[in-house]
Length: 240
Length: 240
Image 1 (spheres, helix red, strand yellow):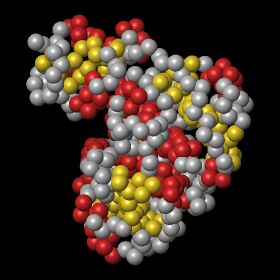
Image 2 (cartoon, chains in turn brown, blue):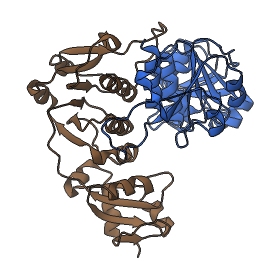
Image 3 (cartoon, one colour):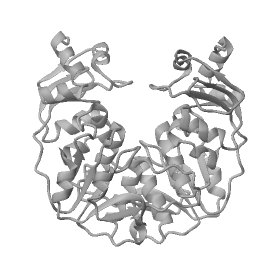
Image 4 (cartoon, chains in turn blue, green):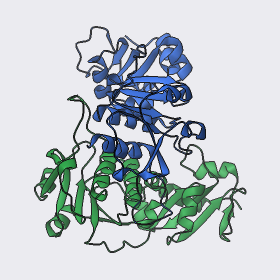
C-alpha cells in the first residue's frame, strides 16, 4: 500500500516543532532507533518500512525504497520510519544528580547529552524553554534511544533554580579547578549555551563555579564543546 | 574581480581527498576559522571574501555574496573562504601523552577530538591510514583552528604500536575501572572506530584495557560516543 498524501503531509509537517506540539507526534528513523522506541514505553502511531525490515508489528505499512526516500530526512534511509506519540512529561525528581541546560541550540549536542545522562544514570534533565526541542528529529537520531529512559522537562529556569534546595554548580572559566573540588552526590549541574555560556541572570542564582583546567598554556585554545565539557563534568560527579 | 572557472574547479575538487593530496591544498571557511589559520604557521594560497570581511591581507580577492554561496559548502556562508597549503607532516614525539585513533570515520568526531587534544595539551595525534583525513572540510570547520597546534601523523598503526616503548591503553567494555586505575603521565591512549571499536589485531598489541563505568544498571544503554569517551579518558590522564 503506498503512502497517502495526508500521511506524506503529516510526516513533512513533523519536522517543525509547532506541528509536533499540535499533533503530539514525532518521527524516528532507522532500524536501531525505531526498534528501541518500539521496545520502550513510547506509543507507536504509524510505522512505515521496506520489505526487508524484520518486524512482527501488525500495523506496519510496507513501502518501496523510493517511497522511503521520499519521507526520510536521512542521507541514507535505513529500512524504517516510525511516527510515535509524544508522551506526557514525567514528574521530575528533586533528588540525586540533576542536569540543567540553559539554551542549548544544537540538536546534535542535545542528543549527545541525552546519551551521556543515560550512561551516567541521570534520570532528570531540565531544559530552559529556549533549548532545542528533544523531539527534533536530529535529537531523536543522535540520542539513539536514550530518550526513552529519561524525564525531560522544559521550564522557566530562573524559577526552577530559585526554588531548588540542592547545591548548584556551573562550568565557568573562572571557577574552581573541578579536579580539586569535593563534589556532592546530590546536586544540580548547569551547562550553558554553545556561544554565550550560562546567562548572567541565571549565573547570579548559582552557588558554585567550577572549571575544567586547560593544559599546555595555549591561551588561544577554543573553549571545550558543551557536550564534551558535560561528559567530563558528569564523570567528575560520578567518579567518587 | 569575479572567480574564474579554474578557481571554481579547484575549490570544488578540494572536497575530495585525492585532489587535496595532489594539490597539497585544503579549504577553510568562516571568519573565525580562517583568521585562526591566517594567524598560524599555515601558508595561505588564495583568499576569497565579501566586502565586509575585515582584513589587511593584500591578496584577498573580493567577491559577491552570490559568488561566496557558489563556492561555499556551509549552509550559512560566513564572509570568507581560504585555500591553504597542507604543511609537511611534523615529526611526532615519543614522549608525553599520545593519542592514537584506529579508523575514526566521522569528520565531526575527528574535529572534536582535535579540539580536545588542544585543550589537554596533547601535541601528537597518531591516526591509522584509514582514519578520515584531517584536511576534510568538516574536520577543519569543527576543529576550530586547533588543527594548527597539533602534529598529526597518518601511519600503519600495527607497526607504530609494535615499536612504541610507552605503556599502551585502550578503552574496552571489559577493561579495568578507569577511576580506580593509576595512570602514568606518559602513555599511548588508543580510541577505536565508532561502530567496531579497536580492531582485534591492534588489541592484541595493547597492554592495558580501561573502561568508563556505566551508572544506573541500564544494560540497554548505548556505548558512549567516541568523542565523549575520549574527553573523559583524556581528563582522567590529566587530572592527577
